[in-house]
Image 1: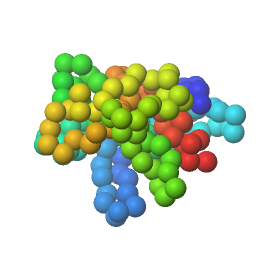
Image 2: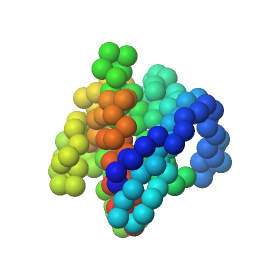
Image 3: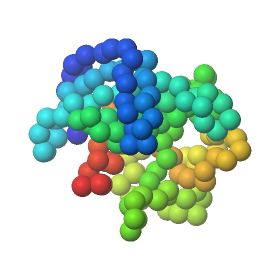
Image 4: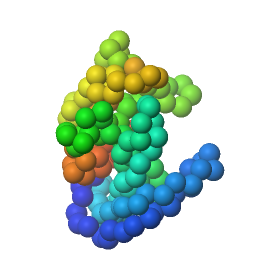
Length: 154
């Protein structure tokens, strides 16, 4: 999936998750993208979320209105600007985490920077998963991960 241009940017995007929770993303940007299956709208929303013992930056990438990946701020986000997204792999029922350090990272993730989530987030309850690392400004990497997840799901 190739990002072509910016369509618009805005404030206060509301999204209702399947759980019924409505979350507001104070800022967002929308892109036009093209892929072999046609044209798509990509929206990247930026907000905050209480997770792993602190309020962290949260980034969600939607393709054609459907969320396909979520990133959260690393412990050193204020310095590094880096966000992390857990690597998930298909299972018989739903998706499973790609476990750090015991699982091998699937080859299709070779283009991404990866790290063990517990290496970048030191807090109680942190899941032992491999994660994709992107800078908050690297929208192309975030879109690429969302597209990979979209096409993995079929």
